[in-house]
Length: 97
Image: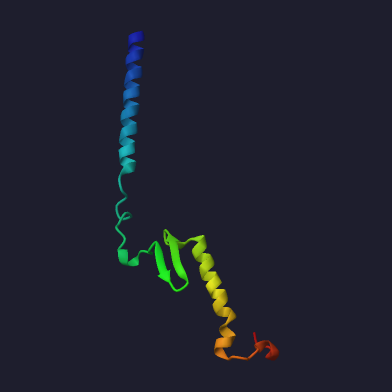
């Protein structure tokens, strides 16, 4: 009786290992249609040189430093927007701005 239990236990362990290996291989396969190579023309580069400095990206998203640079530049541009359009004009006196 004991020998029969040992055989059943070993058979159960072997079947479990075989099932685990088979399941791992099935789940490790690539999903058809979802793992296509993305053309390099449409990928966002890791860094871009601009007049305000190097802008850096990770997975297409700007880093915190890049975001800060862009907002600082936007603040600077908007601060001088009235001067560029009409020097000496203060729109606040006329209810504009």
